[in-house]
Length: 162
Image (cartoon, rainbow, N blue to C red; front, side):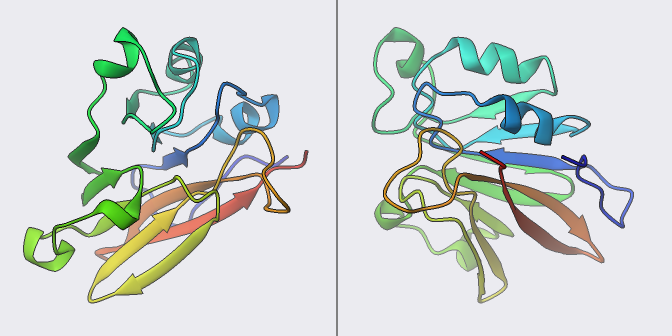
């Protein structure tokens, strides 16, 4: 698989979710060369965060299957700025109570549904990288890339060859 390339020279973010204890070699290969990794929950194995951190700094939130002391140390939601973008991370988009426009978020990243998707509403980019772990139903195995271009968030879904 070719490493991710983007036209702008800014920070390149890899977004992964719902690994459920399966950190595929194809996902690691796809993330090579990324500047930062965001994991949107349902990690399943805390050692996988260390493996990802060998590629790039990792920011992770807790998903509904993450249990134990290691998971309790992870926030359920998180606000951060990366690649010049104001990002909000929440595992299950359906429980989001805030208005992204009022909060000033450029991007809302979620997982949980295993359905990859990118949509824009009201100036906010909604990104679900899909699931990079065990295949569920007939959904693809994917992750995503996020970057800033011309002052706007841009994203793409990357299917993994599994």
